Length: 217
Image (cartoon, rainbow, N blue to C red):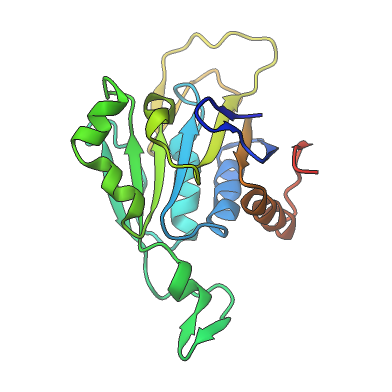
């Protein structure tokens, strides 16, 4: 289970394995279906594990056009989300759908790799994004773990290999870092509050994507 040393263990977790970047993006598209305003998503994993690839799948499902790349040198990239999306048409108020009320207004994509400490993230005002009405995806989130709110959803990405050592230099493919000898399979562990992870499981089931481990049952 993914643990937060400040908050204790997350309520529950699920593990999904993907065969290639396309299926990793498909899992990201399922994850997009549960996102709400002011969600914070912590992404951890080694270089080339697929963090940016996953965020790209989320972004496309939210209607964001254009390629998503890691904001390594800019710290954060803002991607506005089109307001025309409406997933279920459920009316809460006259003329207002659930999507209108709960949908994030933007995807904020962070890369904390180059930050010297969590204080640097706070000092330059980046925590204001956590309550700006969007959804925050933070790559290398372990570097600012002390600042993450209790509502944070955690995702750990790992490369699956067959007893081999990946020694080749990484390269950039379609905006994502790829290791040439990498067989592209990934294990993704999602952890957070039970209500959110169970909603994600339901989204996976609707798209016929199975889980290899269920820590919510």
